[in-house]
Structure formats: C-alpha cells, structure tokens
Image (cartoon, rainbow over all chains, first blue to last red; front, side, top):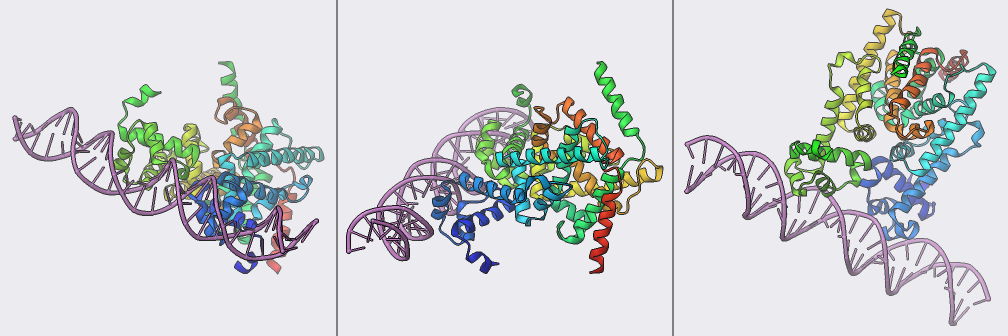
Amino acid sequence: MRSAEDDLTARARIRNAALELFGAEGVGRVSLRAVATRAGVSHALVLHHFASKEGLRQACDEYVVSLVRGGPEADLGDTAGLAAMLEAGAAVRRYLGRAFLDGTPQAAALFDEIVEATQRWLEQGVREGRVHPSQDPRARAALYVTWLLAPLAFGEHLARALDVPDVHDMEAMLRFSRAGIEMFTRGVFAGEDALDAWDAIRKERGSR
Amino acid sequence: MRSAEDDLTARARIRNAALELFGAEGVGRVSLRAVATRAGVSHALVLHHFASKEGLRQACDEYVVSLVRGGPEADLGDTAGLAAMLEAGAAVRRYLGRAFLDGTPQAAALFDEIVEATQRWLEQGVREGRVHPSQDPRARAALYVTWLLAPLAFGEHLARALDVPDVHDMEAMLRFSRAGIEMFTRGVFAGEDALDAWDAIRKERGSR
DNA sequence: GCCATGCCTGACCAAATGGTTAGCATGTTG
DNA sequence: CAACATGCTAACCATTTGGTCAGGCATGGC
C-alpha cells in the first residue's frame, strides 16, 4: 500500500491521508499535523497546498464527489450510480456519510443530483410498467435514495447485526441487498392496513 | 426557552447545551468553553460535573439513549419506538445521527436493541399474516431499521428534496411517511426481475 | 457560632492547534 | 549564467484547548 502511495504527488497523498482520517475520526478531531504525518510531509506543506483546514476539507469533498460521479450521470439506473458510492473504500464511505451529515455544499449538490436522476429513472420505469406508480413521485424518489444511502451511515451497525466483519464484503452485500430487493419487490406489509391507517390520519388532520 | 431552562440543575443545563452543540457541529469541533458559555456556567464547572470531555460525551449518549428507550421496549411496534427518536428535537436527532456514525457503544447497543425488537415484531406479523415472510429475517430486520433511521442522517437533504423547511414538520412527515408506507406496502418494482437478477448473480458467484 | 458539605468560579498550566514567514533546494527558462 | 518559479521545510506565533487547583460562598446540622 505504501509503495502504491509513494508515486503519488504529495498533494494527492495529503488529500488521501485527510480523507482517511476525516472519515475515521471526523474533521473536527483531526489535526493538520496528524494529516501531515500520515502523508509523510511537514504540516506546513498541507497549508501550502490547501491554504487552510477548510480548504483541505473542501478538496476532500470535491474529490470524493468526483469519484462518485464517475461515469455519465444517465446510467444512475437501479443501484448503479449509488453502487459506485457504496463500492468505494471504507474510508471514502465514512467520509461521505459524515459529509452528508454535516451538510457540506458538495454533498448536498450530490444528493440532489442523485434524487433527480433516481426520480427520472423511476418514472421511466413507471412508463415501462416495471415500477409501480406513486402518489408522490418526488417524495418517493427522495426517500428511495435515502434508503439506498442508509448503509453509508449505518454500515458499521448493519455489519454487526448481520454478524459479518464489513458490510461490503461480497457475502454481506449479497445478503442484505437480497433483503432490500425483496422489500422493494414485494413490500413488507401484506395488506393495505398501514396505507389505510395513514389515510385515516390524513383525513383527521385535514378536517381540523 | 431560557425561563424553561433556568430551573434545571446546572448539570442538566450543561448536558443540554452539549447535546445541542455536539449535534450541530460534531463533538470534535465544540470546545468545553463553548458548552459552558451556552449553559451559562464557567468551563471549570463542566469538568467538575463530567470529569472530562469524553465524560460529557458519554453522559450525552446515555441521556439521549434513555430518551429514546423511554417506554417499555415491547411496544417497538411499527414505527412506534422509532417515532420517539424521530420526534425528538432537531438537536437530539442530529446528535443521534452522529452517535451512530461515530459508533459509540451506547448507540451500538441501542441499534442492536431496536433490530432485535423489530425482528420480533416482523416475525409476529408474519405469523399473523400481516407481513410477508422473508428469506432472511435477520437481514430484513436490520435493513428495515436502517431505513427507518435513515432520515436521522439525511433529514436535511430530505427536507431540501421535498422543499420543506424541516423534515419533521407535520406536513413533511405525513408526506414522506406516506411514500414510505407506499413502498413498504406495495413495493417499488412491479415484477420479479430484480429478484431474478439477484438470483442469477448469486448462482454465478456460487459456481465460481 | 462553627464546621462540614456541595456547588461553583477565577486564575493558572502545559500542550496542541491553525496559520505565517523566511528560506532552502531543485529544476526550468531566458 | 542569472532569474525565477516550484515544492518543500524549520522555526516561530498567537490562540485555543482540555484539564488542575485553591478557594469562595452558600446551606444546613451540631
């Protein structure tokens, strides 16, 4: 791993080091010195390249987001575009999870893009009869994306619940993606009770 | 709000202040001094009561978790137990999201509990015919919980996608919970294609 | 009155932090 | 060769940080 890192420019090495540390500990708990040490450079060089800690953080954001964008946006079909995100290294995933929680502008933009693409994809599916229509396509797309992204934030706990070392072991992914597809295909609830209950609440509130 | 806070013990006031700040900014970026100022006490008192920053953080964890546990665990039916979590103040929600991401022991234990209760509840539903059976009940329960918890981590983005100021406005909750129930009731995909595709991948991998 | 106890603070400390500056190599270009 | 940009560092700085300590100020029991 080190040997693979050695031929990267110092700038890239610093960015990678920051990515790992920020992802693992949270931006606030990581000092520029720690980043520098991990990248094998002086802490002044970090500032030289990124001007400030905030600058470094933004660079990380942009880099990660560009990693996820990767291919053409149009192929965000199914879990495809999202898969790229989930297949990234553990460090990148943790970083992304934090970026979403912190609500950095880049993460927000990325989220919006994904929702947009997903909504188009779902509506395309509706037209082709592969996807059920929804009363509120926008809300469904947003929530759908949220669900697909959820393992980013809860991966560690998911892994523990499934009793695997890492959610992104192929074995684990297969297992819980199966559960996900199952729910997306057949739903969870057998009857319409929950929907009816919701409608009742809606009506009650509407009449107040 | 101040007047409501005034009659709390200083210890509680400090804890609440920490909760808000930690949730909003992340533990690493919040200083004990900032917490003290917000609570209207000296920063020495924070240490006096909680011994260290880590102590304060643990106290927050325990408090938040106790809030969520609230009622008897058995009534974690449907979204009930989870609703408590989602209905908590924005600050508590953000804090929880961070706690899950950071993987604090208390958060991990809470997650495990919820998964356990949810699995029992789902299996009960299966026996009563209200819930579809699953090939892998454990994985389904874990993923289901993850999905219900997802708004904790992505609430801000969800709100933006739905164009509401806060995901927990009643209006917004009704809207996206409807979408969720829709998906949980009817699924998303109309055919079994995705399931078949998964089985194909499974078979291919298994034969390698 | 007086001492004990619990809540609370100001002053202090060593360490760490983000950031600046001057300067050292190492090319590269005229 | 001189001039100059580039990548990099050591030394330094002001500020902030988590944490300690001695003591103030109530309250209440004796």
